[in-house]
Length: 380
Ligand code: GDD
Ligand code: MN
Picture 1 (cartoon, rainbow, N blue to C red):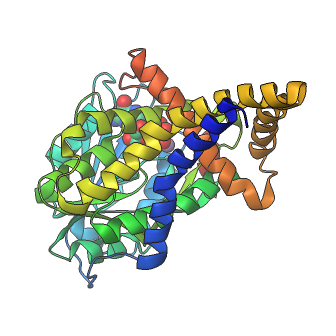
Picture 2: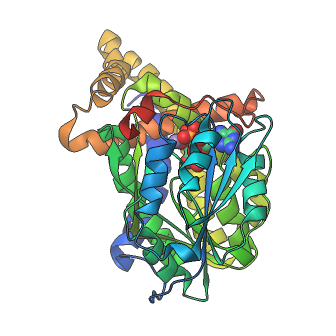
C-alpha cells in the first residue's frame, strides 16, 4: 500500500474513534427523554420574542403564542423590535383588544443585532420562567407546561427542545436533527447539553446572564454560561417546536455557516471550561470540540491525502474519490439518498463547520445578518 493511502486510512480511523466511543457510551447508557425529575408546575412566564422586519409573519406567531395551553394571566410577552417595517404597529394593534398576556414592547431606533436586543429583553423580563422563541417557529400547545416541568427540578436551570417537523420538508435538516437529538439526550444524561435552540429555549429568570453583544449563538451562549455558574442545562425531546429549513447546498450555507461560526467562536472563547464542571467539561465539551473544530479539518486533509494516494495507486481512476463526494453532495441536497440521507446531513454540517472556521480565521462574523425571507413562506 502506498504511504498516502496508509496515512489517509489512519487519519480516518483517528477521526472516527471518538464517535465510536460515543456510540458505545450511548448503547451502554441508553438515554431516553429528559434526565430531569419532571413534575407539574405553572410558574409565571416571560415570553421573549425578538423581531426584525417580520411584518409578514408576526401575526401568525402571536396567534400561535396565544393558543398555548397555559393561563395567560401568568404570562407576559416581551417583544424587542428592531424593525424598519411595520412589525411593531401590527403587534400594538393586535394587543389593543387583549386583556392578557401583558405586553412589554421594547422599540429599538436602529438595528444593533440580535444579541444586544436580547440582552435588553432579558433585562426587562420579570417572570419566573423566561422563554426565548424566534418569530419563524411554531410551538405546540403543551410546550410551556413541558418546559416548566423540567425547570421544576431544582438542579435544572434551562431546557431546550427538539425540532419535530422541518417546515419546507428539508430531509437534510431533519436527518441532522434526528442524529443531534440522540447526541443531546446523551449529553443531558451525562450532565448537560451544549447546543440550545433559538426557536424554543426556557431559562430560570434568576439564572440569566448578559450575553456577548457580538454573539452569533445567543441561546447556546446563555446555556453554557448558566452551566458554568452551576446550573444544569438539558435537552428534552418532549419539548418540541417546528422550524423551516432548506436542503439545497448553496441556500443552506448562509444560515448554517453563520450558526456554525457562532458555535465555534463560543467554544474557543470558553476553552478554559475544558476539563472542568464534571462530565460537562470532561466529555460533553471535548466531544463538541472534536465534532465542530477538529473533524472538519481532519476529514478535509484525509480526503486530499486519500485522493493523492488513490491517483498514485490507480491512476485516473483515483479521481473516483472526489467525484464520489461530488455525487454524494449532488444527490444529498436533493434529498435523494434514501437510507444514507442522514449521513449526508452530517457531511453537510461538517462543510458548514469547515467554512465557518475559515471565515472566523479571516476575521468575519459580526452580529447582524439578512433574515431569510424564503424560509418565512412556510409561516404565512
Ligand atoms: N430585535 C432583533 N434585532 N431581532 C432580530 C435581529 C435583530 O437585529 N435579527 C434577527 N432577529 C430576530 C428575527 O426576527 C427572528 O425572530 C429571530 O431573531 C431569529 O432570526 P433569524 O434570522 O430567523 O435567525 P436564524 O433562524 O437564521 O438564526 C438562528 O440562529 C441564531 C444564532 O445564529 C436562530 O435560532 C436564532 O435564535 C439564533 O440566535
Ligand atoms: Mn430563523
